[in-house]
Amino acid sequence: MRRVCAWCNKVLSEGANPNSPITHGICQRCSTELFKTMNTPAQEFLNSLAIPILVVDGTGLIISANVTMQDCFGKTVDPKRETSGGEIFECEHARGPEGCGGANQCEDCGIRRVIAETYRTGEGCVDFLTHLDLRGASGVRRIWLRITTEKVADKVLLKVMETLEPVATGSLVKEPSPTPPHLPNSMPA
Ligand SMILES: [Zn+2]
Image (tube, rainbow, N blue to C red; front, side, top):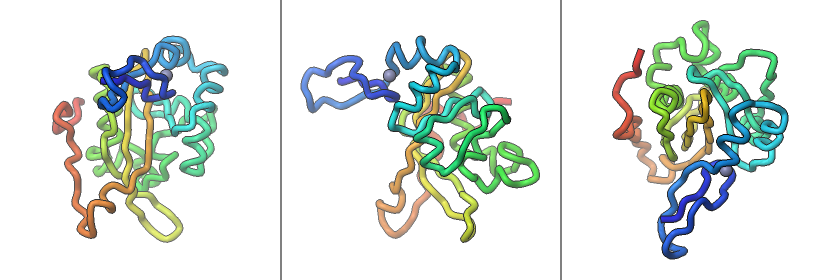
């Protein structure tokens, strides 16, 4: 089994043969050196990665978003202002009076659940399939995402890749199970 850093793609250990399956982890540099303190070099390093990455606290508030992430969602994160995860995605519930995390539907939000679970257990999650309903000029649009998380110190790294997956499986769009085996059915209080 080949192990690769899910964040910078560095090979952590080679598999027995080049075709062996890949498993993801996090390299020393991505964890200890950089994400213990979100200082300027850490932000520069994040910006150098060509994958969209958010750094959030245990409640989903954004500590940092790299340039790829901001470009992907056409948003600029002001580090001086408190920004919730839902705001960068333009999630339609983040715009409501209750804000991101406050609407009834937010309890079922896969992103919130994975962040909270990663924060609580320290166990990262790889390529978790979830969806978001975005508010755009032409109404609400559903997008599908694959998210990978890793807890580092008291923060959660979040890799967010948009995917066409459910559309590609056929014309009948079927809801995938939002609950991987290790996630409980309800969020801990
Ligand atoms: Zn790395």
